[in-house]
Length: 135
Image 1 (spheres, rainbow, N blue to C red):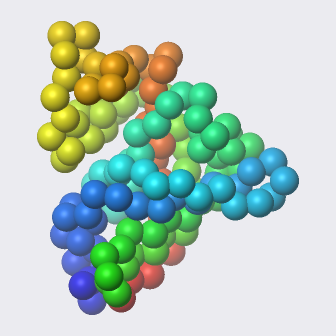
Image 2: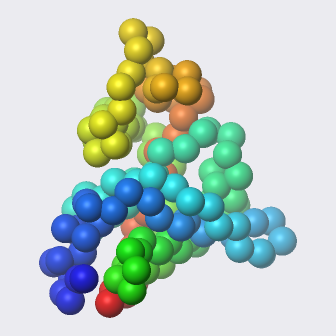
């Protein structure tokens, strides 16, 4: 379990699933499980460009997430944005593919046919933590 901020990366790199919360148009929380990567203190989430997560954060960029195993947890509260830079999008998508060892076909689609590098279909959410709690 992380005891210091510098141990959070190791914990996050080992975990596969997180709960990710956005705020909907009625100011109600919307929580979903997500796959993620963690790099240089930020979290990156791959999702559909038209997902509820994306629509919510375009209205209100306050987010929270929890990554946990048993009684170990990292809770992050912060702001989120959609990555617009193509090079950054490609880099973060490739990190996601590497972490989850995804196999892509010739058109860069995953096992369910999602074209992961198509910015018309996919988005990368960057979470910038304002507060990290761990135990």
